Structures are given as C-alpha cells and as structure tokens.
Length: 272
Image (cartoon, rainbow, N blue to C red):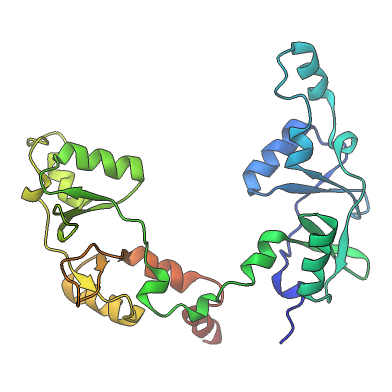
C-alpha cells in the first residue's frame, strides 16, 4: 500500500502573521516544540516560512547592545523565507521524501485545493519507517534499555542522588558481575525523608527483583505485575539469570503503549 502525504503529515499548522515580533516567534517555537512557523497573510494563505535557523542567523548573540536592540525591532515578515515549498495532500510519501532530499529542505507545507492544511517534515517521514504502535506487543518492544544501577554497598543517599539526576523512579542493585540482587524504588526511600540514617547501604531496603523474559507479551507482563503487586519488572533471559538485565518495563511503559495512536487498545476503545 502506497503511503500518502495525508497519512504522515501534521494536520495542525502553527502560523503567525508577518507583523509578529521575533521574540514572540521564539516563544511559539519553544511552546509547540517545532522548528518552523508558517507566516500567513490575512486570508490564511502561506506567504513565508520562518525556521529556527533563520532566527539563529540574526544577531541575537551579538555583544553590542545596539545590534541586539535592532534585532528586537525586526518582525517575522522581515526575516522569513518567502519561498514556501509545498506538496499536495494526495502526493506519495516517497515523492515528498525525494523532493526534500534533492532540494535539501526539511519541511513541506501540505496543500489541498491550493490551501495549506498541514505540514510534513523529515521527522514525519522517518517516523513512517518505524513499526506502528499496534505492532508493539512484546516486552522487548516497549521496555527501557537504559537502567540505573548501583552496588549493594551504595549508600541510600547516593542512590537517591542517582535517581534524581537520572530522573528514574528506581535503581537496580547488582553485584560486581552485574547480577541483579534487588530493586530500590522511591517508595523504599520515603522512610528516610527526615528520619533514619541515609548513610546505610541500599541492601537494607532493596526488595527481590521480579523478572520477565524480553519475548513475553505485554499481557503477560501486566498479569505478573498484578499478581506480584510490582510496578516494574526487570527484563532478563532466564537462561542467563546471573547476567546483567537487558532492560526494565514499568506500568507507565504499558499505559503509554495503550494510549499510543494506532494501538490495539485505542482501536478497540473507539469501536465501542
């Protein structure tokens, strides 16, 4: 089946009028986490594109107050690129990709009956190469491969620091060979908030790890979490129980997968 631009584009255009100040444009780019704004005329037609590269080309980083003051007076219309490369909504994704490659551009405004209806970027096209969320049915497809580990002699203070710095809700305790000995979560450390001795080793508060095979289904992972009252499972090969875990899967990982566009759960919910 041929993928069309319609299938991969972002339907919501983030636009601004030509008179918008650059500072407001910068705030819009940051707020929507995008790399470019479509500059529109009063009738809603695209008249230009302002990218983050266009803004970086200005004198925002200049040391002189005069040049900075001049940049503050510049509007989007003065700095935008008046050339607006576009593609029809029914064009094939491969045609859009080839045009971006040959013209060295990162985005195309998507039009329908010559009116802009969305935008398609390099990221959108690359995302089309990845498996659909509905195909994510195994633990190995959803688990986090980067895990925070520490030795059993690590202090509770050091473990808490690692969790904060890595923005992790848990730490896997391993021995000198990487064999998992236990798991420490934020809940395990709550009793030391204002009382207790946090210089003690994590081995005193860790609980035994609950493991699952990377080829297990998400249903099996959910059932194991429910039966063991565990919010996270270590992903390991039972044939190599003494080896370093390959990852970790949490209740949040499964919930995020359920909420992903195109997931089996979402499809069933919409049918109801």
